[in-house]
Length: 147
Image 1 (cartoon, rainbow, N blue to C red):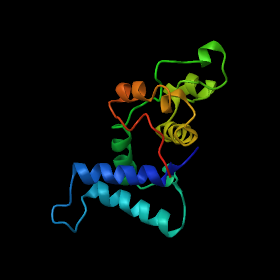
Image 2: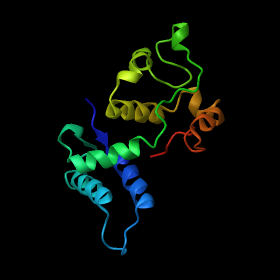
Image 3: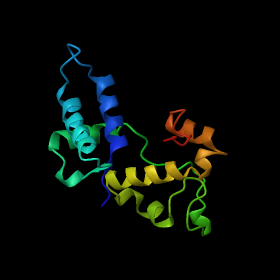
């Protein structure tokens, strides 16, 4: 199973920082602190992914709360796998990923999201970017991230 990528940990930290700011500008609320500890270890050991199975429960719970605030599926309702394509031209997922999406764990879904975003070739990232943004309610969601 794929791990939780450091960029997702960072996004979850930012989610919690906005949701529960530091009460005194120094200390961190429990969810932010739990995620920051995982993030610090990833940086220290020069790792890019955290193993969800061995992640502290508080950090995993905080990450899952962030995860549930994100769009569940990259689908933009233009599915070419139903027409026989191996990869969907609309969202970029493979036929198997489209078929098993509801059975996939959050970590697997985020790994798929990361891959299709990095590739940036699906229609959701170019010709139908506006449509993808409308479906998710996030104007940046339709555009691929630049590393």
